[in-house]
Image (tube, rainbow, N blue to C red; front, side, top):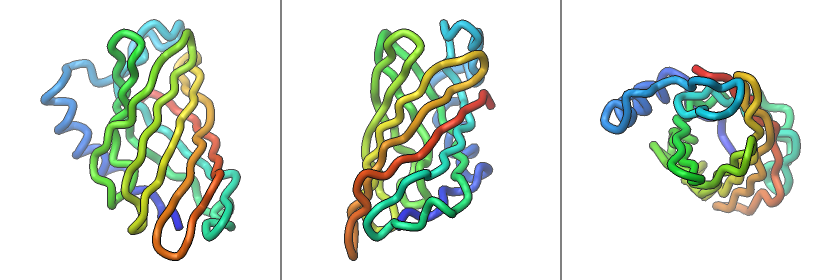
Length: 153
């Protein structure tokens, strides 16, 4: 079953080290028109549907993630410590207009979570959903869904 995500301070240290080596732009700029939304975002992920052995996770508190989002051309990279177990992992995807999507897999609760984030860029916000599934010891959690809201850090 999906455990709570790591606390925000633990994420910040890891992400800051990663960013210091890669870029000097650490906060989104010009977010209103979506022209440049790169930087750190605080994403709140609230599970709204959980199935299989994860049934009941809808009642747990939302997870809060500190995510570095970068863009080169149409390619999007979203780097975060998605779980305590995963360490820093980059999910990859694309941008089409005001919509970004990124996906990938990472270690979680002795198994593997696969996630697809689909978010719309707004004025100082990211809003959308995470489609997720988990496979690991004791069973699976197919077709999970979460709402996602984001604000610049």
